[in-house]
Length: 363
Image (spheres, rainbow, N blue to C red):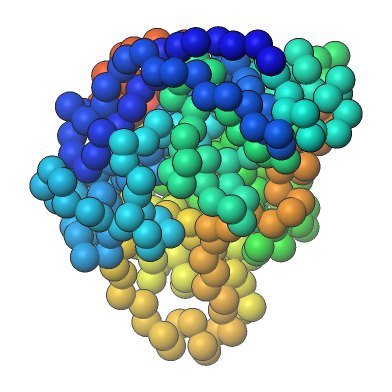
């Protein structure tokens, strides 16, 4: 079997700030019998990478994203309730090309040299959280996580593909869990974020829903208008507490089938009131605050459902492949950085004031 000696990687050494991100040479892992070795072409930047590094998922810590306890050496729990196995190569998004195939993998010719994306989440855990992820030039992954793309059907660039797995997988899992169909009206607060953008794309382009109401902070409306021109997307500017938010909540009251919310915080009660009787609120994140107050009367008097979403169903990633090859999604990429500049990329990524879409790293 071929050897590849060493390659560059970003290794997260433990809980803490950007100083925990070390760009260095590491030994290239050998490809196991049921694994493949990928040359990574592009990798997305996600909140979960940052949240894991700062220990945000530990429920004993600070509820504000990117503001957790940074005591070095403290063993904080990850998203799954277990201590994160630092030092760790993070990165939940990977687009790449298969270099090697393990000797127990069936039909290796269907994988070798093929363009693929890696499924971030399975029952065995999260890529880049429970085991080594994408922030490196080469990565070994289970063959069952690799989804080959037809180059003739795929019109997206490597960079766009690198923006898909985590955000779009998370978004598709939520939409499947909430049973979103083309006959529905969907409300998406925090619409400039990566997962929210994926939700809008999957609703407006892939599903063709009746309407997507995208709520975004002041100054970002025009960016969204350009991104979703020609689609059934209504854009509302205003954060919780602002007049634009209040007007939108009054206008939407009792008209929405599904709220897809990764913002959380103080706006949750208002969002519940936008739902029709029997409507659904689904979430997989809480960037504005994880602990919220909910008026249970709104919930039970209107037969509403509140759904959490982390694990992906079996249909999630096959759906994404079909959307990619069917030209039914169009990921928004804001900026591309070199892998060695990951600290700068994450720092800019956390500035939510003037951008939409994803940041992507390349080796």
